[in-house]
Length: 317
Image (cartoon, rainbow, N blue to C red; front, side, top):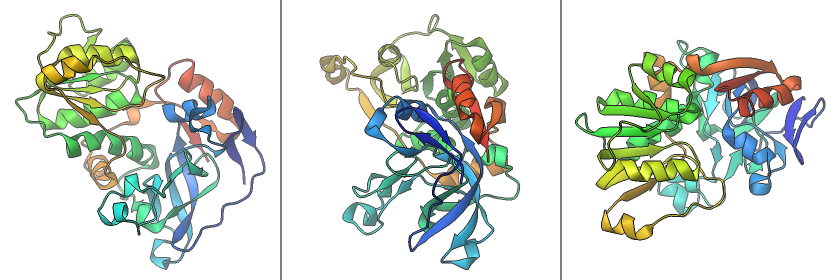
């Protein structure tokens, strides 16, 4: 099969071994895959990953132990857990100590013609959800995770810091709570997408009062973004960290204690909830799509997504 590899940089492989599903796994033909900032970090050396990149996808099951899955259009939870250990049995499979992670750790990913995942990881895509929306299920689920972790009321003031792919999807989900929602970013064209969803936007934080927000969601992955989020959250408020950081971040821990700030790390989320939002039309992520490329043009896709600042770039398989 053809594949796009992380191999001391980015490399297109016109021939790469086809994956073989283990017992209890499915073989999935990839239809569409999305580039994520994590893919860029992996190419730069994050986690020392070597293999096929990609964890955002929609595909079709072509082989499975359970024949009811054959021909089904699916998306998949990227955390391939053992489903037997104490952590999994307690319902925390995304933290399974034995897990592999699609296209990130120990398991080849979605930038290829085929991938494998355990059957419990698969979710059928409703007929009303086209591939162009279904491919957003994984990052949209990550945005939905915020509401799994933090109770947000319509009377709360909520600020999302960062107008990238994840920040926009987080804002799209949080607007459904009816809260007083604001998105802070740096790019007028990206903020315009949020305004089209009815979200109040700010190019920079000027005009936003400090220490007033009940909940602040930090989606920049930069120390400056964390510092801004910390200034915006009120005493006894909640600060949600939605992205990983480049290098170390200097934190005044004493101020967190004095102000009784709740820090929430937030990662993967509920696929069923994300698919429900897509099926009901409550979130339409397609305005984020900037371009589509074939797999052989992966280098150009990465250049557009990560050097020229496009929002969502898709790979067509």
